[in-house]
Length: 191
Image (cartoon, rainbow, N blue to C red; front, side, top):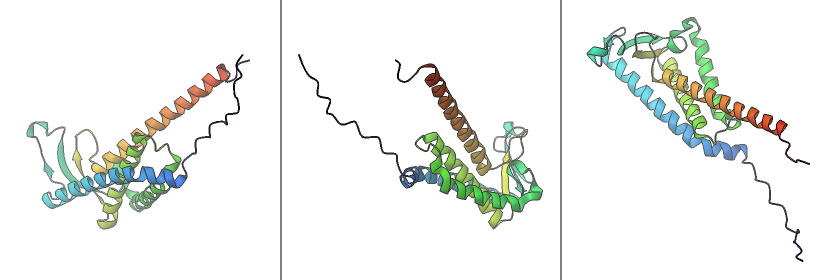
């Protein structure tokens, strides 16, 4: 007959990372992506402003002119020229978005790369348009795909960032609900 030794101490609980550690791990990726977006946005806007007059169009590929060209316009409103009468409000919203991403991102599951990517896209896009509003008084838009309002790299980054973040937060919510349903159906400690 063998006697089992049950004097083993339980495994220590996994220590949750502090908010600062979570911030520190996620920020290099978020800031790196934001820097790439901001750099591309700034460079493309500079090229448009220095090479096109306001209202001018440049066709990159002549056969695609109806669906893709560059047209230099200015925008004092939100993305895609909406709500132009509220230009000052969008400057304030830009500051709030930038501040919120930097200070509150640790409340999101930033261990997931896609979440960090989406926050970087949002931060870079918000910064690109914010810099335009402060330095020029308007945002430079130039990507003209015919059936859609003219936009820029920052707008594209913001839309992609919102889409990615929404999808992953929705997916995480679905997983949480599915786990809760399984736990209701299957007790954790069956008798």
